[in-house]
Image 1 (cartoon, rainbow over the protein chains, first blue to last red):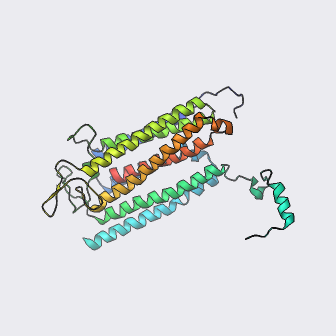
Image 2: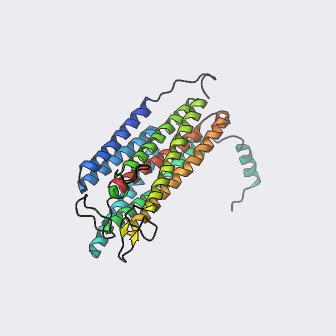
Length: 102
Length: 257
């Protein structure tokens, strides 16, 4: 319960808007790159890095994970390593199927 | 399964009256987070695996097909290669026939990111026990979420309906739009993945809106105020941000790459 009933503290929202502008700027940058740069592996890598940046800001700030205990942070992040493996394995697999067909 | 002797029964009966406090007895919170929040995190982790499976499948299937090799300006729809997303998603409601690549999906992305901002503002207001602000920001979040789902409905109906020209198929007929078996944009699996990935995400947004409406009603009734905390808003907030997070990845892997 609040310290003094009936009294509402002032909102503290500067960090929320800061995070919003960072995410918006990254999205705008992605959009710009989609049109000025021809499609290539480099472009895709840039997109993936920028997406991970955005994901970091959403998870760390909006979902507050940055301010949780270390144990909780690792509990969520370590299983994600399996997904990176899954992604690499299946993309390789897709390339192999491609080579077998064409 | 377990047989409890009368003495043990009597002890646990009295122990049930108050929460246990011993370090190894449930009284210790190593993660310093409530049961509900922790379980929401674990649910989201499992949900992340489901979405990752979808997106990885997209990656595999896309690599299986030929990439379009010619100039972007000369691109035509064909089942021979994977379509360029900006040539498929280039329409905007009310601007028929105008080529606006990815404009609508960029707008949708911004709407969803903004709804995430209003969601954090609701959580922040809940921590200050500012009931009016919680209601205000929850309503904004519900509004933006609803707009996003409506935009997706338009996107789907346009995708299913197809372009004016359609695509000339092998049997000499023209096919317009898409279903799970045929589509004018490219390989069959392109449309299938579009329906499954954006559909699964849209279902999540819809569930989120239902949860937010519950939250708004409970806030208005003073349920959380009586409970002494607005943790429910925080837990549903976690879910809502996750849905936004998934869209960030869908946007990159389905529309940009």
